[in-house]
Image (tube, rainbow, N blue to C red; front, side, top):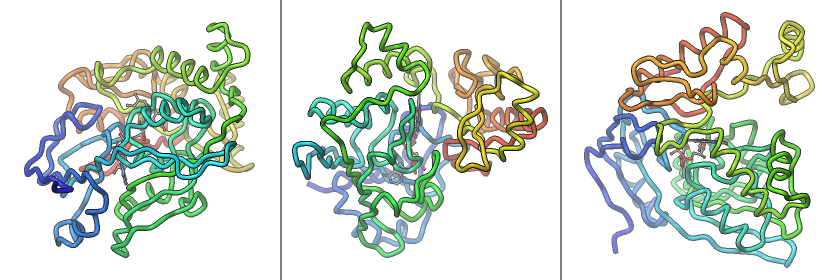
Length: 345
Ligand SMILES: Cc1cc2nc3c(=O)[nH]c(=O)nc-3n(C[C@H](O)[C@H](O)[C@H](O)COP(=O)(O)OP(=O)(O)OC[C@H]3O[C@@H](n4cnc5c(N)ncnc54)[C@H](O)[C@@H]3O)c2cc1C
């Protein structure tokens, strides 16, 4: 059986959760990542632009893909090390993220429960160091296995080599270099649940659970997420469109003095603070805004939505106007979280 399949002039509308129209001159679906060295021997992949596409849940196609789109299909999950307390789980890049979370919980392994129900694939999880409900994937990440386009060889990168930060990594900063083929996670059998994030303890309490198991934490996270976030299958979106901005502490304190309800969190170091992008956008009146089919979710000011036939360019235009209004009112620059294809931010 061939380990890859090529589709020319491929439509990508169903491969991005905004559901916007986009095409790629060539889509290569790779069933076995072992084929990558051979594929990257062809000039079109070796020298041309290549976009690795997972579930398309953190992308905005403001135009067509400029070159080849590569989709990895590997579906294997297995335990590669286990000492009874701690295990290393290896999952192929093509595995659906939430399916991996459920698989680990089903095997009695804790750690990924707060990250339940994040859309997308395992291969994309390290790209922006996915995070939710007080946990980031880097905390449980052991090794990223990737094809390195600069050397033409497979590489194994440990956590430190991935240079993770808030919604950021080596891979996000240098998007043309690595194709992630598999990820290994380090998980525990008796890990303490992490319930410090606002709302999670309350949800468990409402479920009548005082001493939750990891699977119950995942269930609570799913319940909150289903309530708060629009389902992309119903209303196109890419989750949070903006990162929470990290600003100098002095600026954050001045904003807080002027706006007591502005939520503020620890920054990347003592000299900085992280602000709530949702609060800033809401304060500028954007929540529930709609113009044509491009809009902002009524339930969450951070989520841009496609009500039907918005184009990627229209959504990008709206995002730029939101960022400009926040900058004008608060002097804070917002940065998009999804990768924008076919246009510059
Ligand atoms: C409703 C909703 C809720 C969300 N909630 C969260 C959340 O709570 N926390 C969070 O962090 N994110 C969240 N997201 C964003 C998104 O789900 C994650 O970023 C996810 O990891 C993206 O996975 P994907 O497979 O869809 O990646 P894609 O959108 O296909 O790609 C995203 C980026 O990763 C690159 N990429 C993908 N696969 C690979 C690979 N194998 N090798 C190299 N590069 C690759 C792409 O080139 C692109 O730059 C949410 C999105 C939605 C729609």
